[in-house]
Image (cartoon, rainbow, N blue to C red; front, side, top):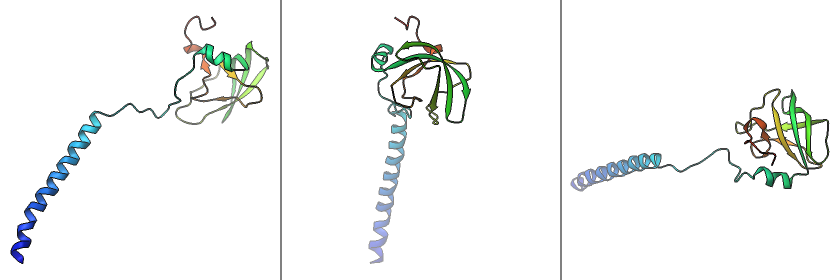
Amino acid sequence: MRFAQKALRPPLLATLMVIENIRIAATIILSLTGSKAFACSCGEFPTISEQYKSAEIVVLAKLKAIGSTTFKWKVTESIKGAKPKFLDVEQGLTSCDPQIKDGQEWLLFLKENESPVLGWCSFNRNTEFLEKGWRQ
């Protein structure tokens, strides 16, 4: 019986070593061929004209006051719909959400009776990054 136990140990050890080597090789291959994955994803971004059509209010607004989660914006130009003088807009608090600085001007797409939110997937845009001729 002792002889049989000794004979089984080397093949078992060899099998375990092969499994470990396969695991290491698979880890290396998968890390080198990783797929695209984005933590901040919203699907497809609509164009400005598509967003304009679906919004009820479109304004240019300049950031006036920064709060902890709500920012006060002064509307500088009404492009579509009602023209409020000021807007209180909630800011998302994730690392994906835009970093907003005092004095920036944004193009805001809004819906009536909805609290405006400025977040990664809200499709509002900093005018610094709009392409030339965006008004056409």
